Length: 321
View 1 (cartoon, rainbow, N blue to C red):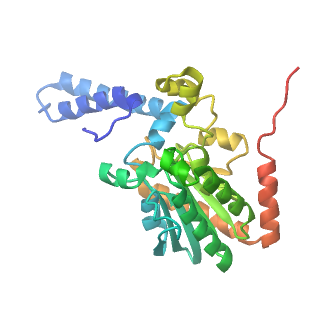
View 2 (cartoon, rainbow, N blue to C red):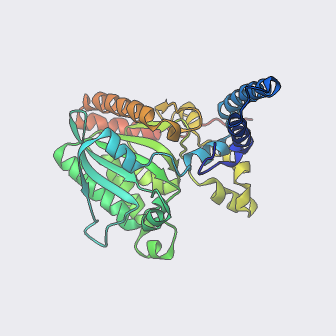
View 3 (cartoon, rainbow, N blue to C red):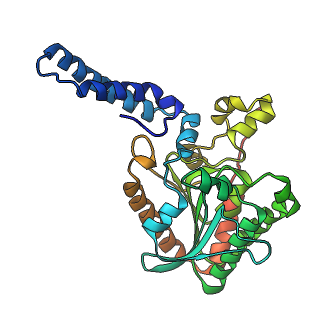
């Protein structure tokens, strides 16, 4: 079996799978000993597959979150929503392709959708800056947020970015200000806000559209104050040591649930969401609908107050002697 993209921790398993495929192409009817070996190899692959994916390290989960075949926001838009009308531009500078904003219908509710948008190939990724927004992307998102607030529409936000674009051009156009302004706006919206971590969730770039009332994380997604590579660059002056710091960042879905930052985790098929996207879409839709329905039962003042209390509760710690 040949795969288009293989993650480093998968290589031993993939090599065995390819051996098995090659053996099964042979005529084994006259070679019972080889048939026994093939059967044993299949059993070993099954054992190794479960062992590999049931005990994933935080760094392995980061790799799955970044898998090029992993479903992206445009896939969720197509699978979960109907009557999608994309909104373009920030009315100040341009239309940042790294952020998608849209009006859409989810179940029987009209909603506003926000999301980080990556590409499906190199050309698309370059066009969309690999999902790392410029300030005009965040301002486009804020334009959609204000529409949601004006018309009383819930906001559904999909997180999938390594972080906001760190270039000089972004800084010149007010990157930090745009992120801060977006956070301030999200904190005061008088409509339900549901965020879904579908892949990467890096730093302020994710937080700028990821603050809300309910956070759903896919099992192999992450949400972190900094990317593992950037953290390793700061601590060790060596970005290749990202695997060494990934566990300390406490950024996996399981970590976030335990710390009370996320509200629920969506399980993924063995190997990641790209192995059975339809099942993931179905479960995510069900979770979003349940969250929106629950939040819609609160009046606007209560929503804003609960959101404030939710944020204030994050980061509780104890000091030892």
